[in-house]
Length: 161
Image (cartoon, rainbow, N blue to C red; front, side):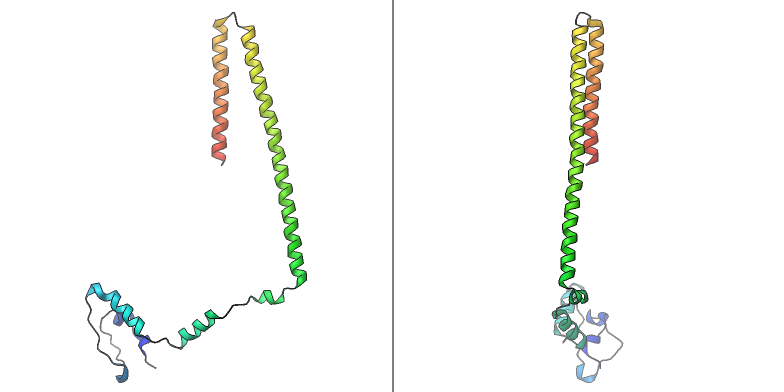
């Protein structure tokens, strides 16, 4: 059984092959310029007839593939899967609610820290308003501390995302 599909790729590109085809299938080999090799190979592929293997493969690909587990699945299995999915969703919801409650307490602590810093600055301004030699370095240090804290908080949030 020596048909056109058994040609070597070298022969398809225009080079001579050592194997000689049968007399009924013999055809002259064309020497093609290098730029036309691809076109020539595509023409030869289009001319060849599909063999038995490609026909069987095409038929198998067109038939629907049935999963063997799908045939064994019953209504009880589907109900069990739906129950598991509902429980999973409930657990995810509870987990999200718990994680958000921690965020609320962090916000309260941040607000309390902000109020304390504002009260501290106000107290320093009231106590040392007549002494600028003490007031200027203390306020510049507190303002630098607050600015550094806010910058560090923003940097940390950006890096965590």
